[in-house]
Length: 432
Image (cartoon, rainbow, N blue to C red; front, side, top):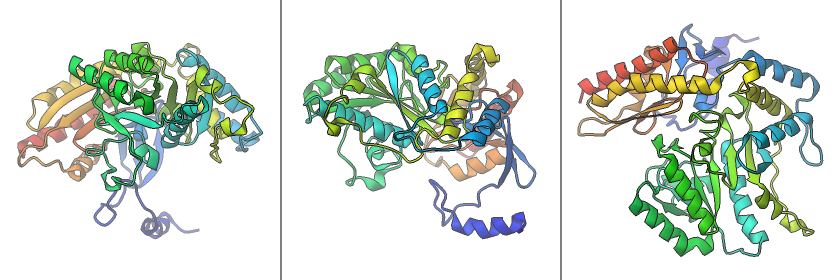
């Protein structure tokens, strides 16, 4: 059996890393174990994870309750196809999601990733109108700074100028971008857009309260409520992409609850399994599902991922949901409120640093937006390396340094994260 040095040196030339220019990238850090909020590296160091492994590990790593549930499921039913067959973990999970979600969001379609969950939502929205005899309603309205995934249909809903998919401009479906209606003038413009194009628009898609990969842009509940009301008036479906904000991250179990909004379709993933296994869900309201019920086979939703509703992933998700219940003495939303208060207090000092444009906090999300002033180009590689030297795992992107720690993080660990941000940005400010 080869030792670690063999498989490391032999394996690195064969991997293709995401969002990385492989010609110039530094070697990735080797991880040997995770526990709680910590990532253990091959050189013996431990890093405090400040971004929950791309926003998934809300309960931290290796939570014993989730691990035990997966182990039990592995012993009896690791996987079976979900066409013509069902199983207990998926049925229990669908029932629980329907009970947790607002309104009559009650029909759950399982997939394996957030991008695919959004793809399914788009198919549902377009086919909903087709099944109702309005096939001309095919366009999707999305917002500037949006990010909804890396597949082709979802790339078409990302900001065409500031997003990461500009390379594919001209090859993507032509959708309609709007400005978030955050003031009266923008609200009038959004209302006019739907009035003008509503006969061709199937749905509006929005990231409720926080636009994640587009720069952690935040808007208030009134803006979200206005979007929902405008969709209702103009007979357009509303899709809520809660892949990032779902399961407590914004301070509520689901961000749309803060605005008392019940979207027609909601997309969930990321923290659904507590960061343990890949799983996503697209959940539709009763009237949306009803439009697919007919004697005509062509009216059915024709989509079926091979690993949809994987029993191991569903078991992990059920265990993760357990941890949100009072009976498990895991006060997740109280933890989020405490994180929010600490982030507000400890990131505020960044606001006065040279090269900082804004500081934003919402729930367990903290963001420091950097400016690109003359001589102040943002060296993401240098920032990421410096954070590792400071004992934390942070991965800034674009012009944003952000924190989205596990809910179980201690006050002291969170203090180390915010101190690392202040230190690195203070050092950067001295160079401007």
